[in-house]
Length: 440
Ligand code: SAH
Ligand code: F3S
Image (tube, rainbow, N blue to C red; front, top):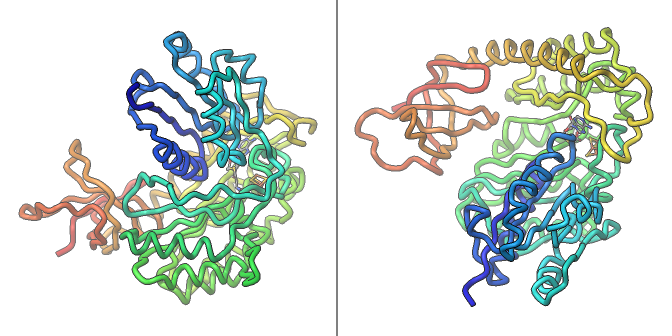
């Protein structure tokens, strides 16, 4: 028998992307070989997202698409948030699926796959009440310069719109020693950028006797020799404290960027979302960031059309965009999710109205970003180069603020710049990126 092959497609957030890197490493260690298309694979896996309905529908359309192939002896598996949320119901909707496994059970994947190979028709890993985080020395990272490192899993908040606490379980912090070992190994292997990951990183609490909090962890990670940039995502405004800003100020390795999801600019809506802060409290934290000794970029997440959101509430979200002047915004139409408290609130809005509000908000933010990005024209920025785009003849990279920069090189620079930190002279700005030339 030849080698067993697998195909894995990932949907959703950075947590999922990183989980997939761990799953790939685990499967390779089991003797599987990764292939680029479902047609070539014996095992077809989807690591799914259920944060909004659209994301959830994607996996079912993928499963339908390759259903006909199931007869050819292929094994289909659903991983991630849809797996956890839907459980065995997936077998009813897509009878050719053999494996359903949520992120809290990935440690069991080798065992579950062995059972399928031994002839079991359907296997599940759906335990959620675990203390474990899924860590493995086998992680196969996609990006050779920037590495994701999980520091905390799950979420104990209950924002009324959000399915994450039901799909990723309760908060579990990873021991600081294990995090530091991984970060040192990554730095030694040549990674210069680290992104610390969790649904709510600012709640980090070291379970080991050292007892570090998030700020201590940040400071320690930033001190690891060889690292140039350390980022973290996501911090909840409720636990975002001033010491995080101080740590950034004092430590140039901590990137000039904070992602602080606000969701709405209206106190009424924030209350109904159970976000546990008011607009004024949120703005106070924004002030800390803005008054830092070095400029720090700010990004956020916003939901429009939450149940009961009036025109007046929506206007308050728009005015918040002006007040903060975000460098980037991820905005979404409210999507009703299973098990969440918001389902039972009154005042659900028609889809067209949510769409109208989203379009207005995105148009406004686009103008704000264009204005903010234009201020960089004429300046020089430091870029971690990621890749070359043969279509445009430009290199692509990011600044410490996480801005995308496309740039050209003078004739003569022929060597690969990927993975290097270079200076770029900014000559043009769009709403989503800067463009320029390699500085001499
Ligand atoms: N842990 C993060 C958010 C995780 S989900 C935090 O603390 O905010 C990522 C984003 O998806 C959220 O910030 C929210 O803006 C959006 N989102 C979550 N549930 C949603 C829903 N039901 N409908 C629309 N957007 C949603
Ligand atoms: Fe979701 Fe709120 Fe946690 S958005 S991930 S319940 S902080």
